[in-house]
Amino acid sequence: MKRAGVKAGSERTLCAALTALACLIGGLARADFKQDRFIIGFWGDPPVDGRVNARYVEVADAGFNLVMGGMGASSPALAQRQRDACNRVNIHVLFATYGLPISALCNCETTYGFLIRDHPSVNELDRLKERVLESRRERPGKLPFINLFPPSTPPEKLGAPDYKSYLNAVWGALNPEELCCDELPWRQQDGKEMARYLNALGTLRKAALQRGIPFWIFVQAMAYGTDYVPSEADIRWQVYTALAYGAKGILYFSYATPPADPEAKGTGLIDTQGRKTERYSIVSALNRELKKISVVFFRATPVGIFDLREAGTSQAESLADAVPVRISEGTDVIAGVARDTDGSLVLCLASQNRKDSIALDVAFEGPARELDRAKGEMAPLADDDAVKSGFQLHLAPGDARIFVIGKPPA
Image (cartoon, one colour):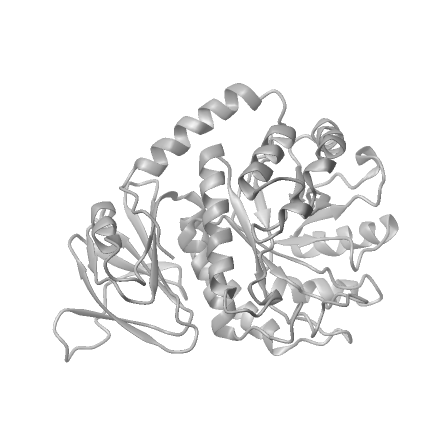
């Protein structure tokens, strides 16, 4: 997939200008919700039963900081018990609304916001607008969350001629505080899985930057729609590519296994008996990394995204214009660049090869350090192949390496 290169600062300038404009035209309509942390959450809350406290200890142990309610907590009474269990482990909740007035719903430190609608069409927006305004009025500072249709959705479902028109309609009616969709790559297996996901990331990124708001993305962690069960490399690829694109939230689909869903072809991170699957361990380890590095990615401002997979696209030159680094084109990497608050540049090199490790010849043309994902600390550069000349970098299947360039430590 070819993308135009973006020079350093251009996206940040656009973002700042459009944020100011959004405040002028939409500030009165939108409440004071503001995302204050990188989100690591999921859809598919576990059952609220006699083991509810233990279940949410497992959720916390897996590194999550946000739960979407409504599946396991299938009633207002169960939502209260869910709230109490989440309070004990310091996890926030996007509560289901159960068709009740917002004023009747939970309003406490645990409440991050409310699940207003999943996959709204343009035809529903006028009705949803009233619900969103009600949420902002009754629970200022809480998020009225709406999960949008993904870009692969046909126009007849969108209620719009194309996805750009769909987003414009959503923006005009709802003025959302964030953007999110669930483009699950393996819901279909047609050879376009990666392209669909990358297109969704690119579309959300562009729209979010234009509107000065963050975007989140769902990560497929179970067989859904087809029998394909995402591997560790598949899951890591989704997460780290999303970070490269500038996502400020990762939501896994699904934690518990959806009951009576004909498209659910396997189990979530927790099976129907409440047992942890191998993907619970995979995601737990990945979330531990995310928690260590997410502060950097949350505060950094996107600068550019560069697809180095196809030679002859000038993406390597565009990357070098944005950040002082040289990487050859024609390699299975997407490079995301962001600017940290101290002026340094954060470079996320995300492998697009989910089957094999890849080796890169990288030349840093400025002071650079690697962000250690296990410790969340800066570490000196380490050559992965002392025999070859230059700086050699290895990427595991679907994995990433993250570097900070400029502003060396005193």
